[in-house]
Structure formats: structure tokens, C-alpha cells
Image 1: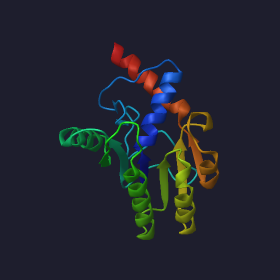
Image 2: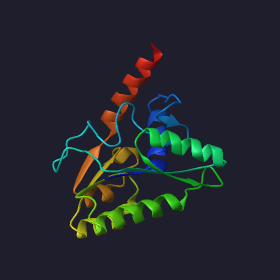
Image 3: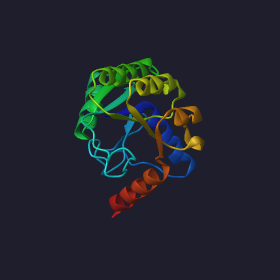
Image 4: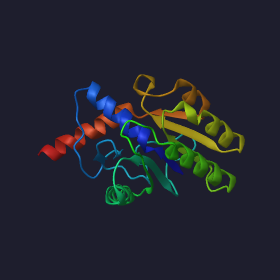
Length: 188
């Protein structure tokens, strides 16, 4: 199963783009400060990484994020994530700069519950947040493999989270290449 801390991913991806003088076009894969995903990559069939444990193919892919906005705005983001093959978990927050605890708590609850119910053999966690270290350790204690995918240590990855995982994939090269290709194709 795939568990995406979309709030963390979105803000770190935006920082990565800004530092590199790039900009993501708003569209199917990106809404500023709301969500981001890599173009042309299915959440359920990650054809971009072969794990040491298995070729990535998820039964479920969850995307957790929080946004400022009214009910129609939240529903729009949920629908857009659903079209990307995610089970969306979108939380409302009152201020743009605040971090919603609902994201971390819901992701943790779901990843643990699915591990206890033996719904997966390995979990892919897309986050760089060190707050997930106890979660990773507990899921591993239950006999599951945990793979962390995120940008590198200079781009928001907590080093201890990387070391807690069974495996780590630095998304930075793939992310940059995929988005450059997408933007170039969109410009044609």
C-alpha cells in the first residue's frame, strides 16, 4: 500500500521547484498549496521503481492533505486525487501556514490499522517528516517492510526517517526529469 503525506510532499516539491527556478503548471497533477503528484505515473502501478522486495503495485494508494477552503474546494481536490487513483483524505485547515494534525494522525492510523489487519506486506511511505519514525518502527515490528520515498536530505528528508526504513528511494532525479518532460510536452 502507498501512503502519501501530500501536505509534506506538496510544500517540499514547491520549495524544490523554487530553488531550481522552475514552476509547476496548475492542472491535473498540481494545485498550488493543495496537492502535487508526478505526471503520467499511476498511484496504483508505480512503473518508476522496482523495489528490492517487489515491483511496486499497490492495492490501495492513500493521499493525505489539508487545505484552506470551502466545501466545494475540498470536494474538487478530492475528485482530482480520486482521478489520479488515490483514496483522498482531505482535511480543512483555517490558515495557510498552519500544519493540520489530521494528516499525520490519519496517515498513522491507516498505516497501522492495515498492518494489523495484514492488508499489505510492504508499505511505501512518501514523506520526509521525522514524526513518522515511531510509525515506521512499529510497522516493522509487526513484520512489514517499510520503504520511504522522498526527496533527499537537502530537500526535506529527515535522515533518521531514512535510516528507520528498510529501503529508501530519493525521488529527486525522477521528479525533476518527469516534471521537465511534462512541462516541455505541455508547451508544444
